[in-house]
Length: 269
Image (cartoon, rainbow, N blue to C red; front, side, top):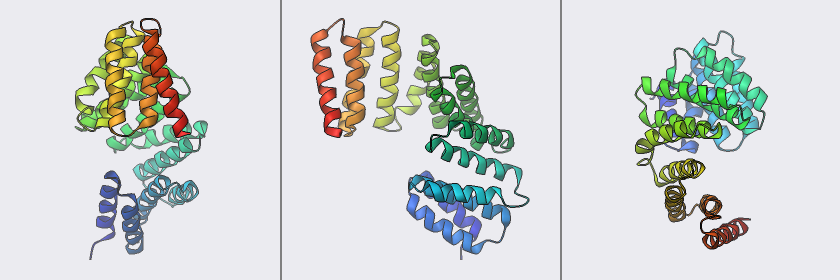
């Protein structure tokens, strides 16, 4: 018979591979077989993540609070629970609460470098949403360094791409292009969607730098990739960005692309 620890480990693996409902069933079995308060706390946090992914934010929040209320909860486990609670605040649009929970979590996660790097990257997203670019840049850079230190190159590249996006928002176009270009060779092979997102963001940097031909070509490529995957919303957004880039140099093409994007958005409702 599998132990609670093994069931929890298998549940985490299932979550990491997108098998959320099977993970939930494994976690229920793990909770039934454990009397270890620290393990039960970790199981509750994992169940909170599953509930969040299934759209049940109320249950997810309750499970996080139950984990945090456990007496003697170990420092790193408390950090993981706080980071999960912060994600729930993000999903609910409670950015002030999310920042507070992420900041408290990061201070507790010094012995869990991967969880700490994830929390830094997520806090960077909140800062960027608030247009607090300088602190977002700091968090994305620290997240990339944290992932790199433990050899997680795909996660490092994602953080580095986000760093590039934050630098673009802040007006450092050269720094943005350097960061995105460094991330691209790692992220492009992950999936066509990753490739298209990276391509579109790099294109927008090139357009902002005045390199219209290069930027337009990348946007065409991104729109094509989105279309092949049936991602019509993203395809329309890429076409609209391309239309904006061509409005001076090729107004006829710009009008055609804008009309195509408008039609896609209308069909999506």
